[in-house]
Picture 1 (cartoon, helix red, strand yellow):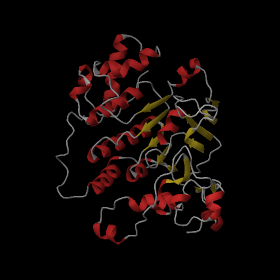
Picture 2 (cartoon, rainbow, N blue to C red; picture 1 turned 60 degrees about the vertical axis):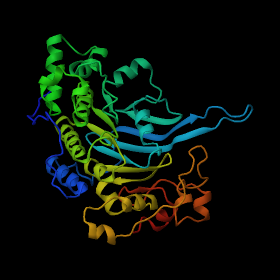
Picture 3 (cartoon, helix red, strand yellow; picture 1 turned 30 degrees about the horizontal axis):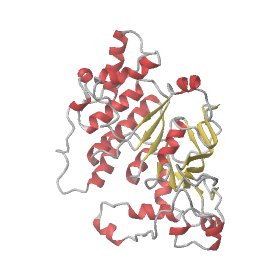
Picture 4 (cartoon, rainbow, N blue to C red; picture 1 turned 90 degrees about the horizontal axis):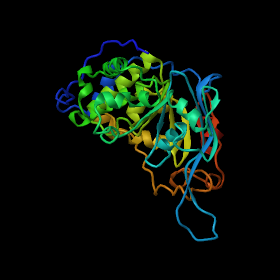
Length: 379
């Protein structure tokens, strides 16, 4: 199967030589992403749709802790603990949060690399939560995952052509040798690399180019849904803008759906229609991207956004910063009530003893906070 490709300049060599000296790299990132990418889908569209491509309901992923005393109940790490969301076809859900919050675990559960402890995952109307190996093999033709490190995710003994065509060969959809050569050339063209690179090896490429090869490998399966797990976190800021712009253009051309996992709020905002903020295995807040950044309601979201750098030094120095006190609680023994209560300056006795419901406080702005819910989402 061939894909119609719009011509795109090749990235034979990726450098930062064109970065203006002295400019703030975050400002450059924002400007370049905005200049290089098509507009996002309407952010006012509902998060919850009658026809979502992916529905995750009360997902839990608990990992047993090794060891422990005989006769005692085995402890578990609650990596994901009761997460629910939906994604419409062609849109992007961004997931942000500190390291260890459960972001990547959600991605691995959706890919079915992990069998969830509880909950349900529905993809295209099919329950994939406990899908068997034969059906999973078929599912992975539609669902692909791009991982964080472009230096370790590519087999150094394989050429670029072999890397790109490995998946289609395993799934027996590669076609003849001539068709495979054409297919890998198309994929390189699609991600902005010269098809002449197909016989080279991973060590001959920069980090940004390697990530493009990883993207081409996923696209070779002709997927409908891609999970992007921290795909720009290991790259220079200038290269991050190129990769984010590339992913948005590919999404626009091929109608793909993404989960975009990251910790850089500025990057996630640009590519996402909706954003979920995670803390200690739970979603604290979920709404449209611009709504979240302009009107954050949960104290944890407010703290994250206040810590994000602003290109204008005068504005950055004048704004209020919210400093979180205390340490991140253990996912083995999370707080009894709200997971965030041990670090929240607004926490009271109810917060410490009763878990807040994840509710819509207006205009599909979902928050798990007693204080916000009591105000009805008032700002």
